Length: 482
Ligand code: MSP
Picture: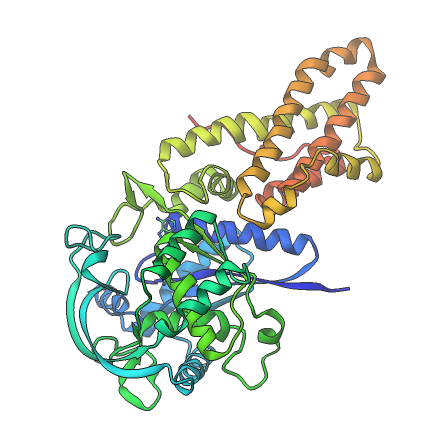
């Protein structure tokens, strides 16, 4: 029997440059959740994509000497290549330049807001950071600069349409407090509540067509295009067919179970998006998980700032599961994490080469040499479940991915100790039956580790399960790096 649907989304990424470690982090943790739910038997839908209708693309395409469609096709391919390299099990890649899939949804959404009386014309006079694609007030700035990019925002004065977000402030607050709409973590939730208490203002919701010529036209006013954040947020429903007459995916998967976003874009997801959905008469997502940022040298890792680590380099040198492991365990979900190549290498050598890789190879060498097979299926299941902490699944359902991997590594370290204490490689000479029993136990417990690793490190998990079940030596898993 099919169990409930589980719908999880990454943000859609700006395609003005290739994806970096920050994006890889977001995507890998979403992938872990998606894989976990699939393994639990939930009908899972995992969406990711590209946020194309922004002024930045204009510049990036020009620099690359390409027209916009050609530029976008290329960079979408680059995104997808990285997803393959990272083993991301997404179900759909949406791009907001897709006039067939996305535009009807965006247009329908705009019309719904307009019919609710929540769109009105006005003049926007104020500040705009093109890197954030966000309007700022003086009080948001730090020393007159954008709080995220440290660059001076542009002053703009233009005729826009506005969205009446202020009307929904109380309702959004109510839904957050009742947990009908959950913001994870608690401190991010409190930040957003404080934000509502300071007063939610209406939001400028369109830009002149001259600024973003490839944007989605405002219905009824071809001189204006839909503001890129309104356009982008709608991807979560347009991808499911919201703009179409018949939309089985929308019926099955909306409201989303989890939007996973960085703290720099939490306001858009926890205030603006719920306001838009309330106006359009649609249910709110169940949960927005807000994660911290990967920083490098004290600053957000960012294409605009220019301090990026390319995930492809790490995959080429260490393998994709090593990168997935690092992102899931060594990068904090709630706080910012400073990532360096050195911290990556130390973690790799310590926990993967000397830890997991070494354990699997030692155990399977003994198993093949002494011709020991894995235990019965019953015993395997017992070993798999017996020492799982009670809240393991809850942790995985929430945002405590790290605690789950910590548990797996407790098992790995425990098995190393067990080998040290029992010394089956010595006992084989004095008490063969006992030594073989110990090794059978070890093989079965290593198999359980492989099972637990499935959502986190799918390739490694597969190799471990295959080798332990067949009684073969696995390929060298994580060779030490000097
Ligand atoms: N296009 C918007 C999102 C629209 S969603 C309706 C956007 N794109 S982005 O490419 O700038 O960022 C996408 C995601 O990557 C965000 O969640 C952002 O927090 C995340 N990250 C970008 N840099 C990051 C780090 N250095 N560290 C962790 N995540 C980071 O915003």
